[in-house]
Amino acid sequence: MSTTNPAPRTAAADGRDPIVIDAPTGKALRKPILAGTVGNFIEQFDYGIYGYLAPYMAASFFPAEDRTAALLSVYAGFALSFLLRPFGGMIFGRYGDRLGRRNALAVAIISMGLLTTLIGVLPPYAAVGFAAPVMLLLIRAAQGLVQGGEYAGAVAFIVEYAPAKKRGLYTSFLSVSVFAGLLTGAGIAALVAASLSDADMEAWGWRIPFLITLPLTLVGLILRLRIDETPEFRRMQEEQKAAAAAGVVEEVITKRPLTEALKTQWKPILIFAGFAITNAVLSFTWVTFLPGYLRTNLGMAKEQALASNFIALGVLLPLLVLSGIMVDKIGRKPMLIMACVSAIVLVPVAFAVVQAGTFAAALTAQFIYLIPIMFISVALTVSMAELFPTKVRYSASAMAYNLAFGIFGGTAPLVATFLLSSTGSIWAVAAYVCAVAVVSLICVIKAFRETRGTRLSDSKYN
Image 1 (cartoon, one colour):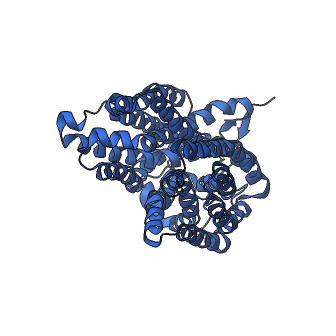
Image 2 (tube, one colour):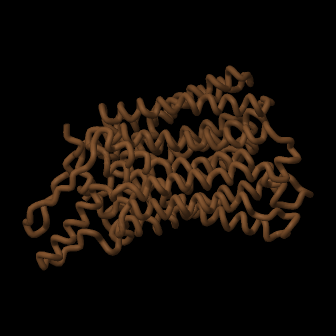
Image 3 (spheres, rainbow, N blue to C red):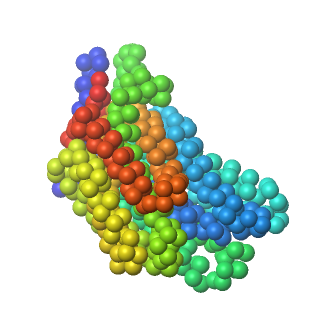
C-alpha cells in the first residue's frame, strides 16, 4: 500500500515539466501532525498557567500595598503579548516563507519554551524591586513576538502535509491542541495550588508549572527537528533549483514575502480577519471572562466555576475532530455561516441560562456556547492556510490571523468586563458578541470563496 500522496502539479513559467514531491499518508502522517501541534500546545499551556496563577504572580512581582493594581499589571502583560503578535507574525512569516516552515517552527518552539521557563526563575519584587515587574513584562513582550509566528506556521505546516480531501480533519488536531493546552496548563496549575498552602504558592509554588514547560519544549523541539520540510515548500525549493539550472530568472521562493503578501493578498487578509474576529471574541470571552463572571458576579465558588469550564473544555475536544470531518464533507463556507448564525442565536441563550447561578446552569450554558465555537474553529483554521498561495502563505496568514486575534482576542476579556461594569448587565456583553458575529457573517456571505479542494499553490483572489 502506498504511503505517499502526490503534491499538486504546477507548471513552470517557461514550460518545464512540473516537479512533484510525494507527501506521506496514513500512519506516516502522524509524526508531522504531532510536530505541528506540539508547539501550539506549549503556547496554550503557557496561557493556561499564566491566567490561573496571575493572583499568585501579582503577590510576587509587585508591591503588596495594592493587590488589585498588582493583578491588573499582571494581566497587562497578558494583553501586551497579544498586541505584539502582529510584529512577531511578520518576523516569523518572512523567515518561514524564505527558509522553510520547519526551521521557523523549530526557532519558535525553543524560544517559547525558554521564555516561559524563564518566568519560573525570575527574582521577586522583594529581592530586586521594580526590576522584577519590568523583567516579567519584557518576557511577555518577547513571548508575544514568538506567539505571533507559531500558530500560522503550524497551520501552514499541517495543511501542506495533509491530503487535499482531509485537510480539515488533520487541521482539527491543531484546534484540539489549543484547548488541550489551555486545559492542561490550568489543570496542572490548579493541582499545584490544591497541594500547597496559599503562603507556599505565593512564595515558590507558582513557579512549578512554568518550570514544567522546559521538558515539554525539549520533546517538542526533537519532534520538529526529526521531520522533513513540508512537501509544498520542498516543491518550491526544487523548482527554484531547476529554474536556476535552466538559466531562467524566476523567483519561485520570494525574497520579499511580506511586501508581496501585502501587494497581492491584501483582500483575502482582510476577508479572513473579518470572519476570524468572531472566533477571537467567542473563545476569549468564554475561556477568560466567563469563569470570572461566575465567581465575581454570580457568587459561584471558584472551584465550581473552574470545574464547569474544565468539563466544557474536555467535551469540546472530540467535537473539534467531528468538526474537521464536517468541514471536509460540506465545505468551509457553510461551516462558517453556521458558526456566525449560531453565535447570534445561541450566545444570548447561554447567557440567559447562566443567570441561574448554579453549577448545572453554568455547565449547560457553556455546552450551548460550545456550538458556535465547534463550527468556527476548524473551518477558520484550515481556510487560513488555503486562502493564500504557498510562496507567501506563512506571511499572509500570520498577518491575517494576528490582525484579528491581536486586536479582538486580546481585548475580549477587557471589553466584556468594561461593558458589564459600565452597564451593569451581561446583555451588553452578549450584544457585543452578536454584533461581531453579524460583521463576520456579512464577510463570509459576501466575500469568502470556498477553499475546499483548491490547490495550495494557487492564489484565490487574483
